[in-house]
Amino acid sequence: MKPMTGHALVPVADQGDLVRYLSEINRFPLLSPEEEFQLAVSFYEHQDIHAAHRLVSSYLRYVVKIAKEYVDYGLRLMDLIQEGSLGLMQAVKKFNPYKGFRLATYAMWWIRAAIQEFILRSWSLVKIGTTAVQRKLFFSLRRNKSSIERLDQDEAATLGRKLGAKTQEILEMDGRLANRDDSLNRCTMDDGEEIQNLIPDVRANQEVLLLANENTTLNQKNATQALQTLNERERAIITWRILSDTPLTLEEIGRKLGVSRERIRQLEQRALAKMRQALCPAQVVSYSS
Image (tube, rainbow, N blue to C red):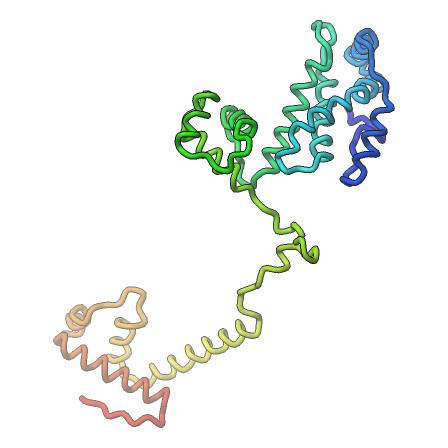
């Protein structure tokens, strides 16, 4: 079925227009069982969009009634009505009038399912109900907790027996309910500024990053020049001991060069002193052979 058009079928988005919307849908007449059956047959057999439009319009008040049951979840009533209306349209699309029951009985499940799916999507960035049991537990727990802020072990066990769920499942879902995500786009109460605009940016600015990059380049250039002051054996020792990703021990280098561990230590200290002298010419350094 193509989306049905009509100014009253899609609720307005502004919360302030709720009263006007309710006034408009109340103008649609309720259908008698006979009228409902004839319209449902007309759409079921002939895809009569006008008949579907009348069926949906007559049940919009029913959507509002169901949506009001879910206002405690912290979502706008108009958004709940919007989702419930989509569920109603799906119910009309799939309704078989020959099965012997009223559209209200069939549509109730589609409306509730649409609203509950919307609540689960909106409640958390992390999917809160991954199984049918968890989805049922989410709504059952909300209804049964009343004014309790958080459940303790004994309360969870009692509620678990009532809902037919394990204590740990109750506690896990209670934790999800108690820590709903907040939006960075939400405005503060003081000046209406979005929260994300009040979070300080701790990243370094471009000037600091550029200076750090220039310092790194300069240090690499100076280190390369300092290495050029060393002889071949000294450069090898510094490379193996300091510049290598996996530095070698004094003993390992000694075996490579055929000298003692202590001699390698002396050569390393001499090479480092030469490099410091190259980097700081004013510094007086004496080399031991």
